[in-house]
Image (tube, rainbow, N blue to C red; front, side, top):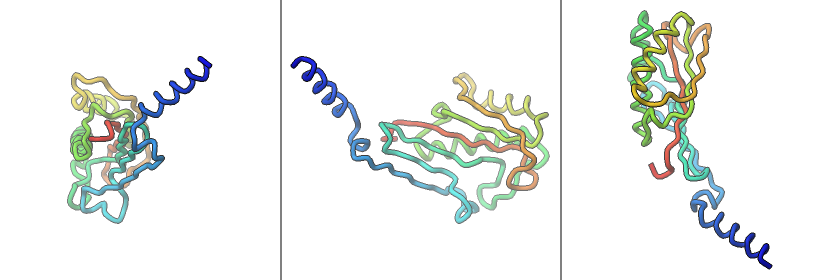
Length: 162
């Protein structure tokens, strides 16, 4: 009898400790566009809630595109493109209740691996005094628009209520 009682208590604790939105089995996926030029092309941000007590935030590749018309800014300046891209990441995360400290994975794409040191400098500025998230650096032949030298996509996680 005590074994059955222990199993019952474990079941009760599991159900009580599970957030209500996760118990109903519904996952909410929302897609957002914050820049005019991206509408109808791709979603810049996707949030997923209903898995445990977290809201996951996925950002599409963010680069040095102008937020109004999508033109590439700082065409011959990798460090300026990197800084602008990370600035935009910060803004997008803020729109969804997160900061760069909430990033759980980042993937950076560069058109030339010789920019690695500048990319590290840029990331060090962004995460100054904060732990760095897991990161993958890839060299690609080209990015979405001519003149782009840098792009980063990130995944962040915050409590579901944020």
